[in-house]
Length: 71
Image (tube, rainbow, N blue to C red; front, side, top):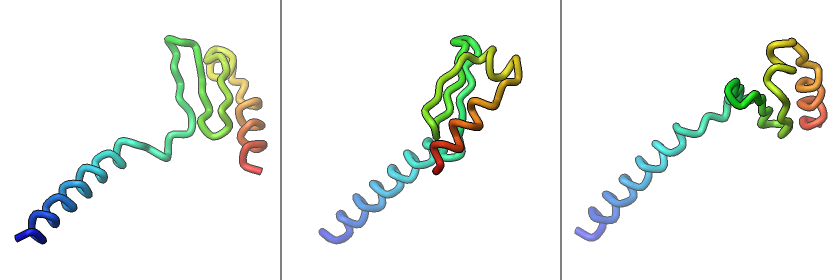
């Protein structure tokens, strides 16, 4: 009886933990936030104006920051 209660709690905890893991997306590398005029590169921590990076096409700084952060 006690084992069954414990098993239910463990299964419930594992399922809840699994749902939380799905919310975190490790594939997200950059966040583009046009209303705040910001691009945030999560790997390097670099934040730059959206218009400078995306609209003008100046991706060099983001690429260089990524190279430096992965070394």
